[in-house]
Every structure is written in structure tokens, then in C-alpha cells.
Length: 617
View 1 (tube, one colour):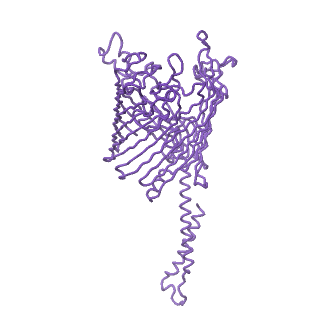
View 2 (spheres, helix red, strand yellow):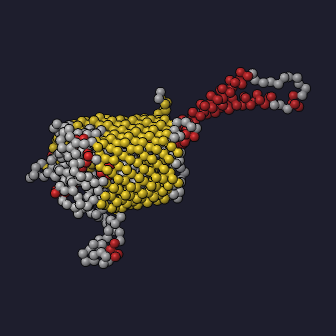
């Protein structure tokens, strides 16, 4: 850049000097008869052309430097904003939300494995009776305090974290032991209703304080180094999704080392490359050899059961500032990228997963080992086009892999409790999924129209495949007509073909978000409208129509080649109020009309009413 500035300054000075000779005062030229000097027109034109060229080169270089400094944009799963001078920054929110649901089990009797489509109130007929539930209304509320501190060690080094306090603790939980004491039952002693947190409380499914993520970032002269336990995000979020919204329950956290390089010029434009190493699992660990677990440094027991992911992101990504400047100039922003993963694991030690540091790892000759011998190739392509009124964004994912030995784990026999690995078969992975989103600002800052289409590959095995670990009560494989189950059987079915959208990718309020849990073995189409009624007050409304790809996976199937594809039609609305002082409130209502895929028998409409109160900081 310094060379460009010097050349530009020299040309400007040359042109200025020429003009200055024309503007000399009369007394300065008195007594001389020399004519006023001037540059020839062709010289002036050449200088002007060179100045304009250097200006354009300067603009390009400034843009490249800005892009390089911000090459680790938030989209790439790193940092979007530049370093700040404050040593300590604190972001986050406190949220209270509640929901009232009715008939999310769709009035269906339990399937052959004894499970409802969705949990029903406890006081209902025994699921083994195979009759419809008589009660289907559930009400609940919960809270979360999320803290996201940043320590700016210097302008180039920072440490970031995410800590949840009372994460989704249900309002009315953590009850004092005096509350239901047999000798002072509620409401005899009102103080017994105070909240109490007890160590190892069997009524709490998680600790009250959960450090979830901690990672460091170092801006070097050749790129951004990130390391630690950090969020993972890419594209629309079908494959990996950080789940950062205030109403989110899920989100991907990875143990990762990555390096975001500055953009490099390629025949298809400037690309940012991000090589990545993910530590998926370290497998069995050994405690400190002198002092035992909880002291010193635990370490890997054997590398053969480690699982790793080697990955690379290659993308052209405009920063938020670049997008704003382009749209202000009525230009479009065109971004694209590819995210490739290679995942592999050789062995697995089930005793470690079951007993942790209490597992007996020696002698190895008596250790149950699963010879997994697995690998997977995952390619995720993303593209986005933005104009002043339009947004078109798409993501497509493909999975190609192999599991050399799928296995089950259990006692050797009814009389021998020894943990044993029981090989099932090899399994092939062939999956795909994708989504296309379009938005049009019909009335800028007032009305936005949106359309979305998504699909996830299916498998013709019984059940949708979102809970592949579900079996019948006797341990046998679920049959056709069940809601969930494994997607291979090890004999005539040795492939898993259903792709599952990330659970943090939200499509609706009821069907995929709560009843099924994820988009899999289905396609959907969703028209949506957003009306910004007043500053801070917005109304969203959408319709979601969905169908199964493999009818054999639905509860309506009675055998191969049978079943109905049509899942349902859902209508959702959401009213959101956002103040300028950090407060947000929202209300949601959804209704689902189930179709024949959830048959046979009479079905009930599902309803959901929800609210949220949020203080953001």
C-alpha cells in the first residue's frame, strides 16, 4: 500500500505544480515575455488515467487488507469483530420462557415398542395397554442465565467463554427438602417452599453452573489462530450449528484447533482457507499415575480408540461492513464456500463409556473392544447472494462413509454379567440433505416475504431414525409402524441413509422441533411473512407443509412398500417486542394438522402456546 500511496502523491504533486505555474501572479512574471506554460492535453489525460488507476488499485488493496484483518468472520465460526481496548467484556442474556402444549402425541396410541410420539402426562392408561391417551396437556416454564465473557489480553490476543447458570432449570424445581416432608407437608410450613440447590440432587439433571465453552484467539501476521472448546458454525446450520439464539436448546461445541488464513486470490475470487483439527473423542483415559483421579493431569490410555476430524473450509465471505457498503452502493454481495470433513476412528472401548475412570483397562486380553474401523467423508457446499431487496441462500450436504463393525454392548449371557461386544455387521453411510431460502423485502423495513424448501434423505427401515437406539421392550428390533428405531438390521439392511438436520436448525414450532426432533427422511416447503408493525414490534407468520421421503418409515406402514407420505400442515405465528434498552418479549402459537403418515386411526390436532421474557446485555 505504501508504494501506491507514494506513486499517487507524486502524480498529484506533478499535476499541482503544473497548475501552479499557470496561476502565477502578474508581478512575478513582470519583465518577461515567456508564454504561460501548460501541459499538453494528451499528457493531462495520461496523468488523469494513471491517477484513476492508482485510486482503484488503492481501493482494492484497502479492501483486501480489511478483509484480511477480518478473515475470521463470525460465519466461519471464529470472531467477527476486531479487538477492543477494554480488558473485560461481558455479553449474554437472562431468559424465562414457558409453554403450554396440547396433544403433541397427536392422540395416537403407543406403537408396538410401547412409546408415544411425544411424552404425555403421567396419569394416563398404561402404554402397554395400547390405547389412546386420555390426557394430553402439559405446561412448563424454565430459565437460563448465559454469560459470554471476553478477556482482551492485548489487541491481538483474547480469551472467550460461555457459561450457563441454571440452564433450563424448570420453574418450581430445586425444591427444599422441607417442602414435602411427611411431618410438615405443604402448606403447613410455608418456608419449606424456598429454592435449595443440593449437591448430587437426584431431582436435577444438570449442574447449576455449566462452563460450556472456553477458547483462545490470537491474531497473527498471517491469520487468526483459534484453539480450545469453541462453537462450530457453517452456512445455514444444517450440518453444524452454534445455536446462539435466546430460544435455543442445542448447539455444537467442539474441541478444535483452527487457523483462518488471510484471503488469497484464486481464479474464482479471493478465498479464505481455514484448516481445522477436531478432537472428536480421546477414548479411554488414565488418571494421574501417582495421585489418582481428580489431581494432576489425566492422559490418553491408547491412541487406537481416538476419533479425529481433519477438515478445511474454503470460502468467500463478506464481513458485515463490506455487505453494508456494497448494498449502500446498490451492489450485490456474492458469497460461497465449501466445508470438507474427513472423520475416522479405529476402535472403541465400551467399558470406558460405561464406567469412566472406574473401568478396568487391564489386562487388555480380557477387555471388550469394538473394532469399529470407521471413516466418513462429509462435504458441505454453501452459497449466498444479497441485494438491497433480495436474499438467496442455499446449503447442500453429502455424507459418504463406512463403519467396519457396528456392534451392541451387553452382558455375555443371562448368567454372566461380563461386558461383551457383540458384532452386528458392517454399515455403509450414504446420506444427503439441503435447504434453499429466499427472502424479498416487499416493503423495505416493513414487510418481508420468505420462502424455504428443505429435504433430508430417508431410509426405508422402520421408524424415522432420530432415535436409532430405541428397541422393543424385549430387545428386538422395532417393526414397521413404530415411530423410531435403528436404520439398519445387520442382515439384509446394512446401510444408514437418513440424513438428520442439526437439531439447532429450526423449521417450525411443533412437528420437526418437538415431535420428531429433527428434519430427517422428509421434505418440507415453508412460505413466511414478516411484518415490522412498529419500531421494535414484529409479527411473523408461516405455513409448513411436509412429507416423508420413505413411506415405510412412517407409523402408517405395515410392511415393505406400504405407508403414506403426507406428514402434516402446520401454521405458526410469533409476536416479538424488542426495546432499545435490552429487553425482549415474545409470544408464539402453533397448530399442526397431522395427515395420514401418522395413522392409522383417529388423529388429534396439536397445539402449542409459548412465551419468553429476555434481558440482554
